[in-house]
Length: 373
Image 1: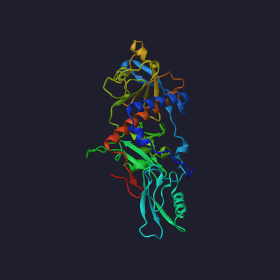
Image 2: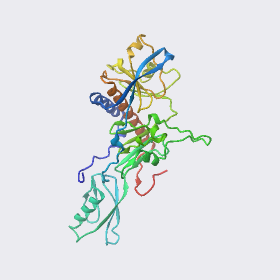
Image 3: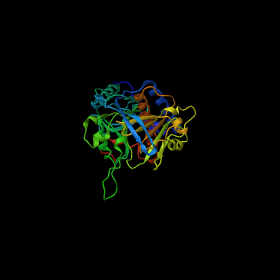
Image 4: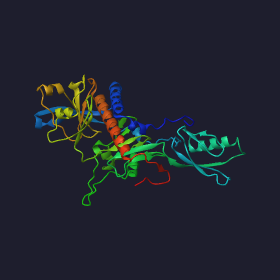
C-alpha cells in the first residue's frame, strides 16, 4: 500500500555476517520447518543401488511441483526505496532539473524542500507529494519526475552464468528474462567446444529463505514455460558448476561443508570430512538426497548400524546431499523440505560472501541502460 514503508533491503548485510550467524540461521530454519513443513507432492517408492558396497536401500522419490501462482505477473507498481535515484524538474524553471537519490531514511531533497519522505511511494504519488509540499513556497508548482536508477529492488544471479551479479528490477521479470540479463549459463572457454558448464539439475531460486520448486533443465533445455516463474526483489538465483565433483554435508555436524568426491567416498568418510556429528545428533536418521532438486530421491540410513558393522557403508555420488538431523523426523516430505531449505540457505550464504569478496556483486544499473559486461 502506498505510504507504507517497505522493509529495507538487508540482503547484502545478510551475506556479510559471520559464518557462525549463518550456521545458526540454517539451524533455526531447519528447526522451524521441522515443526511446520512445506507441501510436497507425488511421493513414490524407488531404490538406490549401492551394489559396490553390497547394500541396496529404499529411497522415496518426491516430485516438487511449481505453484501456478508463481507464473502470474505481480500487479504491484514500482515503489521507491533507499538507493533509488530520480530525475526531478520544476516545469518552467530554468536549471531546476536535478538527479536526487533516496537516502537511507527514505527522503529526497529538492529545491526548497527540507526533505520529503518518498519511501514506498510510486512515481505518480511522489510527483503529487512534491507538488503539494512546494505549494508552501510557490503558486501552482508543476513537477516532472522520472526514474533514473534503481538500487532498492534487486535480484541476485550467481554461479555458472556469463555475467554473475546483482540486477535491479523495476517491474515484473521472469526467470528466463533474468537468465538472459545474466548472459545465460556459462560455456566452456575452449574454442573447440561449447560445453555447458552449468548443473541445471541443482540450480535453484531461493525466496525468503525457502527454495522454490523450479526445474531449470525443463525451462532452459526443454523450453517448458510452466517453469518460467516471476521473480521478486531479493530473490536469489544460483546455478552450480556441472564440473564440480562434490557432495554436501549439512546439519548436525561440526563443520558443514562441500566435500570433494573421490573414487571411494562413502557416507562415513563424508561425515568424517565434516569433522563428525555434533553431540546429541540423531544419527539413526541420516538422510542422503540424490538427483534433481525438483524430483529428488531421499533415503534414510542408520549411521550407528554402519559404525557397528550391522549395515554396509554407502558409496556416494556427485552432488549427493548428506544431512545429519538434530531430531528424528516424523514426516518424510517435511524432512526433505528441511534438508533442501538448509542446503539452499547454506549455499546461498557461502556464494554471497564469496561474490562480495570478489567484487562481482553490488552492481547498480541505470534503468535506461544495459547491464555491465
